[in-house]
Image (cartoon, rainbow, N blue to C red):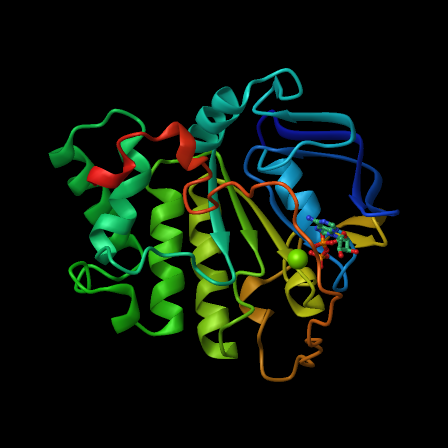
Length: 277
Ligand code: ADP
Ligand code: MG
């Protein structure tokens, strides 16, 4: 295990909704070393996605310190954060967030565009990332021609193609059946074995139990932070584990701030040449 790649110190996040304050994170502290495989587990509404948005520098904390790759993020400008995200973090979401009008290959090439890499090399790197997720034969398909599991593999290829030190995944298996979910977890295992830090956010205890480290979060606070050296990712969806997935019910929420484009973790405002892709 290497140095700290994520440091959260007394991170609080309060959303103001009209008269009401929602304390989504109430002082969360933990650090993650390069090469760890961590799940952040808790029920719906416990603050997991907020926590992921803090780690991913997609949103700023109300108070507390967030350091990514040793860099204190509080004083960074939006543009500096965008560059940090693009270089350091690969994002994977439950709903894939693939661009429907682009082919699989173009989707995976896209984050490299913002690193000034020329087109032929972008293409080679994307093809390599797609072959690692066993999609070398689907590169010219459109996303809607793929199954859910295949779409998530494309999203994983897009997250890994920049060789980030951290992969952040929010409910990455939430829309997949058990067998496909297991193969996605095993794919994360392979990526982790090659040295990438993986952080998976989930409400599914079967995933929490299958990762080497699990932080349990409830009502915006850490309840436990445990290590399980014997954890086995392939058991995440084993047939005898109980499916305790809960249907997400949440109050309708008003999002006031303009969300970042999660696809590449970059706000499109910083990408004047985006349309020409
Ligand atoms: P989880 O991912 O564990 O379901 P979230 O981090 O999405 O939890 O939400 C934690 C709490 O913060 C919930 O009460 C949720 O309604 C609230 N919340 C999340 N995002 C916003 C937002 N943009 N504006 C207002 N409230 C929010
Ligand atoms: Mg969530």
